[in-house]
Structure formats: C-alpha cells, structure tokens
Image 1: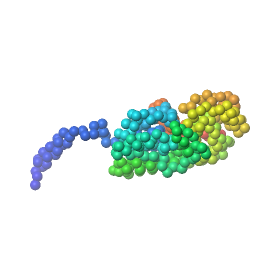
Image 2: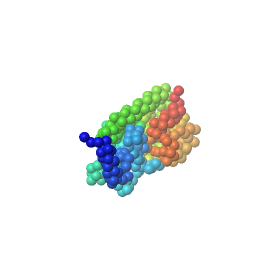
Image 3: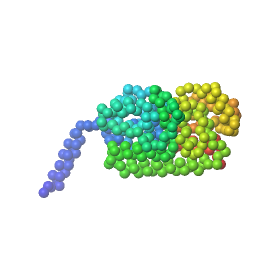
Image 4: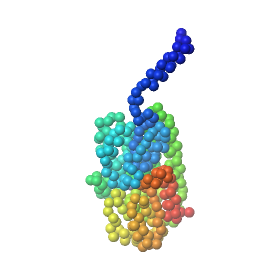
Length: 311
Ligand SMILES: [Zn+2]
C-alpha cells in the first residue's frame, strides 16, 4: 500500500519529468491538423468542417487569377510540409500533379481531389487549351450545390482519415454545412422561377454554366474559361445583338476581369450592370470583410433575381 504522501511525491516527480521533455514538435504545439486548400470555395468548406481542430490556409493568395496560376517552388515546399492538401480536380488546378509527385517523397501528406465524384459539364467538342493541357470539362463545379456537397463529404473524409479521434466532430460540422447548402439550393430553385428573362449575359469568363443548368437558365459568356483573348469584334456585335433581341435589361460583370467590355455593351444597349462572383475570385477586402462561400452565393442570388426580373 502506498501512502498519500508517496502518491503525491510520485505525481510531482512525473509532472516535473514531463515538463523536462523537449518540445518535439515545436511550432505544432496546438496539435491542429495543417490543411492547405488551393482556392476559396475549398478553403471555406474546410474551415467550416474542420472548425478549431484544423489550421487551414489558402494556397493562392487573394486577388490571384486562379486559371493562370503558376506554381512556385516555395508552394511545393509549403504543401509538402502540410498534413492535407485539398484541390478541386485536374481541370481546375492542372499543376496539382506536380505537388502530388513531390509529396510521394513525403508519405505523411494526403492529397485530396475534393471534386472526385462530382457531375462534370463538358466544355465543348474540342475543349480549351490551357498551359498545354486540353480542358474537357468546366472546372467551376462548386457552383452546383450538389457538387459542393460532394466536395464537403470528400473534405470531411480526408480530415477523418488523418484525425479519426475527431470524426464525430467533422461529420457533424459537414452535416450542418450541407444543410446550409441544401437550403441555399432550395432558395435558388424557388426564387429563380417565373423570371421575366432566363438569360444570364455575362461579360466575364465562362464560369456559371453549372448554376445556369441547375436552375434552367441560359448562359452566355463573353470570354472562354481561361479568358485568354479579348472577344472578337464579331463576338461583341453578337453580344450586343443578343442583349437587344432578348431584351436583356442587366449584364453581369466580374471583379477580376476589366469591366470595360461590360460597360461598352451596357452603353450600346442601355442595359444596367450587376456583379456575379464565381467563388474563386476573392479579394483581400472580401477576406477582411468576412465573406463566405454562402454569403457570396446569397449576393449572387440577389443580383440574379434583380437582373432576370424575378417576382
Ligand atoms: Zn473561373
């Protein structure tokens, strides 16, 4: 039998020994999972699912053109030190294979294609060449709320794979977040019916086809997915004609593309301008003001209702 005094001495000795342990993982004192997400929708999904159990950062800095991002050597170094690397798919981040190849040397890093299992829309017969890779599918999959839910599931599964002790926490957060996506989808469905026009005329790059298809709208964009070339004079004339013939009262523009084209069409046709956010265009100011994927999609819905003149 041990006396209480001996137990106390033992406990004191133990706590002393533990305090002498060198900080093995300095800088990881919080023991949070380190996650790097390429673009804003994935970053925002991850921070909603991971909550205070993860430390998530965005690989592409705010204000970056996601379709023309050039991977830097320091990105590969940064990602190879993380626990989980989240990307959309090889259509969106065509350079993701470079990170995955580098990570093969670091078996600790888990690379996850969050868009795996998503329903993809084809771009066109020939696809579109971007950095010598011919894109066959439209990469903006998160603008279909069903796909967004699939991405949430894939992210939750990745977190659980790395940190199974907190699986209940991740599953609960993922479930709650998916409820928000479902509610948003229902609002879109309900509020975008009986509109005066069904045409989204977008003086930006090809990004909203998923959204248009989901809610039975027509989509016309001035630029291709990578927005490489200015629209030809013929395309400009066609756009102006479509605005006039379909009595489009509002034209949509986006923050990352010079609004001059939208302004020119508006001037020619008397149409007004409204903004749409594709989810991957995120500015420093957006981050600072606390925008979320949901808040951006709510703003889009407000502007779609106004532009399409829905009751
Ligand atoms: Zn895009």
